[in-house]
Length: 292
Image (cartoon, rainbow, N blue to C red; front, side):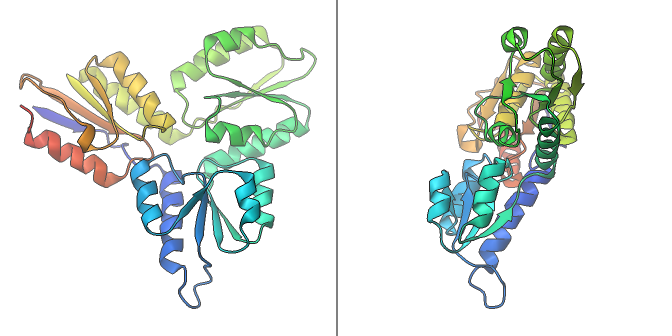
């Protein structure tokens, strides 16, 4: 039996940067001359991975989730998570009593700049992504005109903006690449003066393409990611279309394959917020063949 693990599986650049920052702040907090003031807070979970968030909580990192909680903080350090936040929240965090550290993914920051500039110029903003996802909520908060979120064909077909105003279309960085192109095609067939900026990051494209390729050859496909991880859920969706036996797990404890032993290829991939050690645990578990 061959086990193929995606080379792109695990932390992406933006997630690694954010996680490293928080652990560095934890190590330095309280040390004389470090310049880091504790306690450490993150606005929302730093990434969508329960294992990492729980480990940071054990180290004293506190998660806050509302603007009111920001206002109550008079000292310490607040880290803006990798998904980013609205312009109003960013300014709120920067002006409270704590030191503000911005761990927003650089690719997400680029979308903020595009949306801010385009909307200030009068454009209507369409965000192709998952409504309610923290990244999408943050992006909406950088538009000076009402932004619309579209995530399926029905919403694209029913979109009705001002035909006299230009439209700027951007995407959540982790959206399904194929679905993005399909929705853009629908919108472009109905709208005039459309500026499409494909802001799906390269790491997402490569991860999705590799996952699709592995799953197409696999008898069993395993996708590792947090329950609330949007990009992991999209990998599961993509792999499920290629391989009927696709499993979505958080850790090795969730893995119950009950293999027959006739399987020739088992594929493994993981979302952008899955730590390397969890991927390795799953690899080792499958390699030892404990369940068959």
